[in-house]
Amino acid sequence: MIRALKRFRTTNEQTIKLKSLNLPETLASAHMVPHAIVAQPVRALADLASSTVHQGQDDLDEYEGAAFSIDALPFVIMHYKGHPPDTSTIYLPMTVKDIDQITQCIDKIVTTFGLPKAALTWQRKDDPTL
Image 1 (cartoon, rainbow, N blue to C red):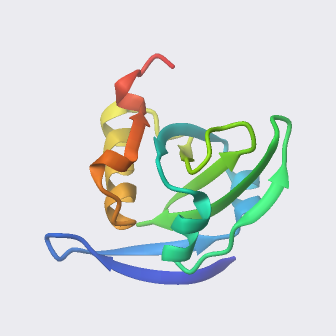
Image 2: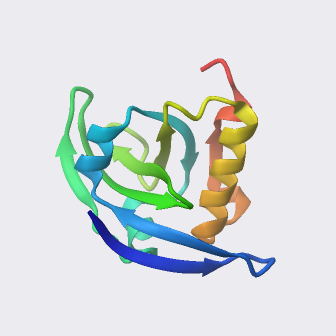
């Protein structure tokens, strides 16, 4: 279920299509892996995309999150109850395994949401063995 479609312009005027997806459906359709942490709450990011924040609980803990896609790549932004406040973790599908590809995806997500590079507090390329 697609709830919203936003068009963002990057600094080089390339239009990026950001789609809001249904979080439970996205989580059920693909195994997601954490690849970055940003210093922004999920709700602020969801608001930028006119998306809904879903609250739930899984085997780990209570969470809030939102699901999106950019150029047909689904991703999830979540915050678990025990994680530091005002942070969100970006999850990509397990099929995205190459560090360079992961880094490009994270850069595109951060850029699309208009976040400064300083908001990216950790990403997979910082410690690929995790």
